[in-house]
Structure formats: structure tokens, C-alpha cells
Length: 601
Image 1: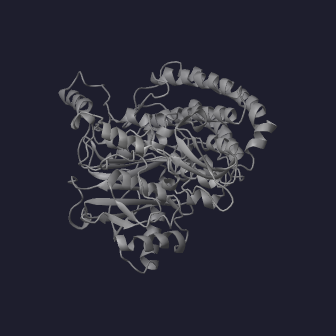
Image 2: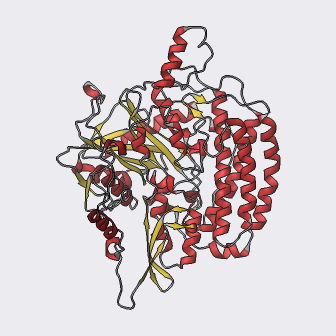
Image 3: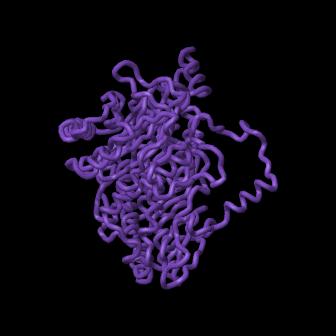
């Protein structure tokens, strides 16, 4: 398959074989045959169906096909009305004003697939699939909020990202992208009154009753500004005494239009925006974005650049997990560990700063490689950290993991099993804490991860304690990977010589005019990416993260969809907390390990 990079030949061959096997199976077993197979989709098989055939097909894929597609990985939409390049001849996509995109994942097949539904502007409505997958609830609300597509039969279709008084649907192409495109903001007395009314809490609006036959319930807001909710995040609690009857998450306070901004930025100038998604993940956020563009453009990344990327990603995995580990202990009553762990994080940031020039948000990966080569003395700093960190982790094991109070507060709390995790779209450490040792770095290696020796930690308790232990063990494995990078760093270029890399290496800019022109154009207007669509998932710090990118053959993205792990994870809070106490909810929130920028985007 042309254009697929950063995977071993064995892995890519196995993926192609599995995709071909799936297509043969669905052709033989799905008797409706009411679908169209979109050709030349190198990233995943893509099927188009009409709205009436959607639920039967999805039910077949989830329940009836062998080795089923048991996870709804993502659900998004595309406003097609301004798109020019949608294929020609037999490859031309069905006519549509809007397209719904369902992405499914089969763990047993190790395969992602894409289901598309074409919609006309005059009939923006499809049946809700919230009865097929539990996690479809929030995804459908997001699509309705941002695109205005109705989902018939949805139990509670209301805004999720935007305020309830917002006018319009922001990801439509005819919705303004900047405040300067509309009249200056004014707040009349009438508008202020309506805004204040919208803030009133009415339990019925949240699907909660005020009382039952035995007692009246108390309602309590946890957040949106509270240290234990880890961001601008609110949970509306329905309480019977101190026991939780229901806990309804309220998100969107941190939404800033990251996907909309992608439509206004050149391909390379959008890289710094990706850093601010999971703002604890640093360059880990850059990786799925640049990998998707490299696959779209057919850019081969040099081996040295791939190993540098892996090393920096694993540094940020440790950094993110240190923040989780310290705040998790703090939330259940331990004050000291977080201060020790932040000291170690600062040591790690010293290395990141020496290599990239930045700390939390270096925005250092580039299309085709990295921003610059490793500086002199990098290996000494990395070796010192690798020698220093193991003893600190052993100290934390005694300080936190073996602490009896922490164990009593977290064992058996917030429990879910593997089937429930998959049903709700849980990935990463939260899934591996249920006993399923599924990690994309092993199952579908990218950036050369198949060349490294490391294990996938997993536990089978599915509770707060095991979610913590998985992350702690992952830090040990990240140290193993970083040491292998240190001892086996290849020589060679740190960036591809492909004409679409950004910015191009300056090597010959002072020798020939063609190179100077290329450098000038790519730095001012940005590269022109070929028309097409691609989605590239990676194993990020908190779970699977991917960028679904659509290029219309220009210098900016036509549509960028960011699938983050934290969004579905928060949707599980009601399931995890019902019948428990408020103090247990604090431990549950801490164990999820989320940041609100990763949720709201």
C-alpha cells in the first residue's frame, strides 16, 4: 500500500490481509448487501450505507459477524458542501451535503473500519445508535451540537460542547470561525436575563427525579472549579444522604474549537495547536497528526527521526504518569508524594528542554521528522536520568502502592469489566486494568515500536487501584524503551528530504534557487497536501488518540477530527459511581486520568 509509513512490513501485511478477509466475509455473510465499498482507502476499509440500513449493518458487525467489531471507536461528521475533490468515475463518493462517519474497532481482528452515511441538507436525520453502543450517547450529542444532525430516538439530545443559548452549529462551513467575522458582542438586559435563566439547575433537564417513594433527593454540584475534578469540569450529583444515586458529567467549559481552527491553519502551523489537546502529553500529541499527514503524502520518515520520536514520546508518557500518580495519591489523602513526583518531572523537563527548547508544549515534531537533530551531550543527560529514576519508582511503590489507607480507598471502587470497558469506548490503561493487554504499540506498531523490547502491563481488578498500578508499571516499561533508544540511536538525517516536509532542511538554500523557493513557499503558505482522507491512531498516554484528516488538495485541512481517549472515559462516571459515596467519586475521577482539553478540544 503506497503512502503507509512507520510500520513493519509484517504488521502492514497482516493488516492488509485482515482487511481483505473482512471484506470477503461481509460480502458473503451480510445478506442485505446494501452498501458501497469506497475504493483506495489505504488507512481502513470504508463502507457507505443509507440511513435506513445503518442500524442493521452496525448490529451485524457488532453481534453476528465472526470476531465482531465490538467497540464504537469514534463518531463524527463532515460538512461536504464546499468540498471539491471527492473522486472521479467509479471512485466518486456518493453525493451528500453532510456525511456521518462511524469508526469501529475489532480487538480480535486488530482492525479498524469506517462506516459512512450520506445525508442531504433537507433531511439531516438518522436513527440513533445509542441502543447499539452505550458510548454513542455523547458522540451523537456532539455531532448534533456542532453540525445540527438529528438522531431520532436519542434519549437526551441536547448541547454538550456549546452553551445552551448558543445559536448555530460551529463546525458547519457557514458558521463563523472568528469573533471578528460577526458584529461586536453586546449584552442587553433581555439577553442577560435569558443567560441567567439558562444557568438555573433543573434536575428534570438532566434526566434526574427530585424524589422517589422513600425520600427526597439532594442535588450537589461538584465543580466546575474544584481541585478534585482536575479541570473546568462539573458533575451534577443526585444524592440520597451521602450515597450517589446518579452522577451526570457536564463538559464543554474548555471547548475552544480545536477542530475548527485546523481549517484556518496551514498544515505545519497547526502542529503547536495539537500540543494543547492532552496538555500533559507534549509531543505525543504531535505524533498522530504528523503520521496521518505522512501517510497521506507518502513521506518516508528516516530511521533516526523515528527513534528520536519514540524516545521523546516515552519521556512524555513518564511525565504524564508522574502527574497522575502524584495527584491520584493526593486525592485519596496523601500530601507528600505529589511534591516528590513533580521534582522528578522537572528533571525530565530539563532533558526535554535541552533537546527541544521547550518544556510542556515543545511542538517539536515536524511533517517528515523532527525540528532539529539531538544536541551534543543529550546521551549523558538521558543516561543520568535512566540511572536515577528506578530508585525513585521503588520509593514510590512503598510510599503509595503499598500504603494500606490508599488500598482501602481504591480497591473495589469504580469497578468495570472488559466487556463494559469496550462497550463504553475505554482504551489505554483503563482497558488494560480489566485484564485485556491490548496496546497499539504492540498490536499495530508504528514509528518502529516493533523493534523495541517491552511488556504490556495489565491487571484484572478493573478498579481504581489497578488503573493506578498499570500506569506505574508503564513507567518502568517506558524507561526500558528509552534505554534502548539511547543505546541504539541510528545515524542519519533527522528529517525526510521529501518536498512536503516542513520546514524543509536548509542544506542547499544558499546554493540553488529551487531549494530556496521550496523553503520559502513551505514556510509561508505551507505544503499542498494531496486530496484524500486518512486516520492514524496511536497509543497515547491516556488511551487511543487519532487524527482523521481530510485534504481537498490545498494548503489547509478541509476537515480535521480529533478522537481523544478522555471523551468516552468521562461518560462512564455514572456507571462507575452509582451506589457509592462522594469520597469514592473523588477516587474514581482521579483514577480516570484525564485533562479537560483532551475532552473538550
